[in-house]
Amino acid sequence: MEPGHLKMLKIYTGENERWQGKALYHALVLKFREAGLAGVTVYRGIEGYGPEKMLRTSRILDLSVDLPVILEAVDTAENINRVLPMVKEMVKKGLVIIQDVESKEL
Image (cartoon, rainbow, N blue to C red; front, side):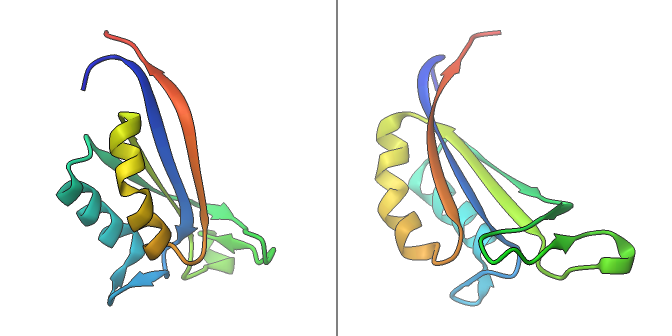
């Protein structure tokens, strides 16, 4: 992937969300790899809440089994736009953000 103007696809969901028997985040990673995206990273949150305002935390006294999960993929606008129908089909609960990003050569 050449440095320059790119798009970042960011997906916020929960670790308990499923797609065809798999964790949604894992299913998305596999689909993105199959679709040829340059790469994707999955972050597991230590605390957060969503629209329902239910606090999810990794603190031992309040241990949640559904922590926030964020997937980030950066690629060309063409490649990001190509996977959006798949994301729309798979992500039933969550937030999807697309941002313009600038990549610099190091």
